[in-house]
Amino acid sequence: MKYAVLQAVLIAVIISASGCAHHNDRAAMDPRELNSSAESTDRVPSSEVSGKSSENQPVMFASSSTIERNLGETYKISQAVEMKSGFNDDDWEEEEWEQEEFTIADPLEPFNRAMFQFNDTLYFRVLKPVAQGYSKVVPKPARSGISHFFDNLKFPIRFVNNLLQANFKGACSELGRFTVNTLWGVGGFLDPASKKELAIPEYDADFGQTLGMYGFGPGFYIVWPGFGPSSARDTLEIGTNIFLNPVSYVDPGYISIAARAYEIVNDTSLRIGDYEILKEAAIDPYVSLRHAYIQYREEMIRQRKNPPKPGGIN
Amino acid sequence: MRSAKSTTIAVLHRKTTRGKLMKTFFRIWYLYFFVTILILNAPLYAATPHEAAEEYVNKVMEVLGNKELGKEAKQERLEQLYPTMFAERELSRRSLGRGWEKLNPSQQKEFVNLFRQVLEKAYIDKILSYTDEKIEFTGTRNLNEDQSEVQTRVVTSSGRVPIDYRMIKIDDKWQIYDVIIENVSLIRNYRSQFRSILARDTPEELLEILRKKVKEK
Image (cartoon, rainbow over all chains, first blue to last red; front, side, top):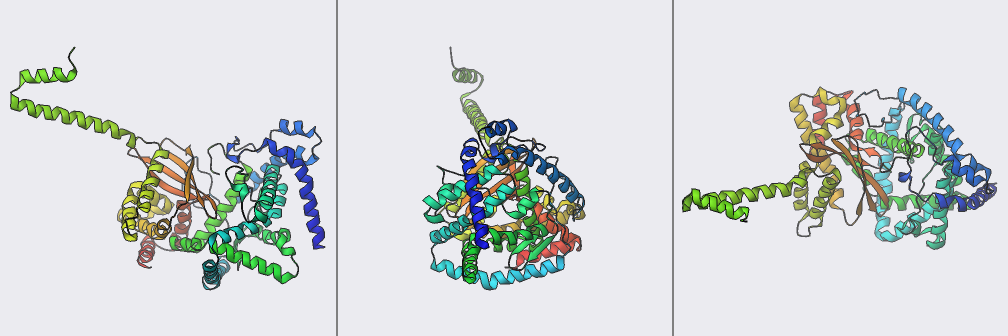
């Protein structure tokens, strides 16, 4: 059963790959260079798309602009509702150009604070010592390579979610990265796709983001033991990531769990110190993390919806 | 046609004795010198936000790259640089948001002071451990005639981190009042924390929390 799903994903990849070859020529542009106002969500001028569709393109490309427009409408409405029912009613006056700050309700705060404390202890008592020991044994370039390797493997997650978000440019870009990195990057250890000569842009996408693009607000804040900060919506992402990550399909089961654990240790070893800085800098680390999390997530979704004007924040 | 210089001298020669001539001479050259310096310096003050940001980054890099300084010496120099780079009052006021008005002027002053120490303590180690990450300036966005955003990207081993600086022009000098790292704004992040603290504590208690934090290690 699991293999059938994996095969289905691979077939989807191959089909879109044939469409990608045409689509990619047009948009080698960085999202920054796209000119779009806050209202318009048309990222692909419809004339271009319809012109292409006469060349035997798969039908799904023709309607990408309509999908994006509909997504935009739904998102705006849901966001308006979200703002009104936001948890924080601080009406500190921002300057006119400031985009509204994102807020999230936190009705489970006592539970969340307890989980936050648990994760904190887990990090300092277990994860950090292991990662530090590991980093002494394995040199940094090797660890970076391993990190790239696992990152490359997560390609189906990004690809499928880009497709679900009707971001075909992103899907193709990710496909390109995967191909280049696997073939020329020694199975994913190197990252030639990011080098200046090629510079294939990354389009990180996950399921929580996809749901957000379809207009789902984040819901309420929740901190999971082990996984960390999340929201009601993003919790669904944890399940789908396991579903789409090829590592989960490794037989026998305990090897795939071990591989996942190894990936976590490796990634942490590259990032020791980041969490400590957050704690050091914050007066109330729990609130700081909650704020940072929701800003980061919602801003990512907002920028996907409305690509910024030239010179805007990437 | 005599030059301005020789005319001036001729005029002076006619009008003064030798001793007074020398004095006036000096004064005039002093004036020339002074005016030239002023003209040369003017661009520094009317610099664009981008130039100001680059200047600050370069100054910090200079200190960090100076092999002759020990860690403490570098820290001292950076601490001296800090008030020149950051618009401290703007930064602190915006971090408190509505809470700023709840503080009386002396509390506000203490808050600015304490907040600076909190930030320095938090970030100094990370800054001192900078090795060779590349900093790219990727653009500028003008928000207002007095406010602007300078976008940069730091290329680290684990990826590219976008860091934007919001700058404000005060007395003709551009200074930083907000740092936005991967879309998370520093002042907004602190504002959310202070908001939740001030919802249950008084301003004095807030200052006490900050004092304790600065003392602890």
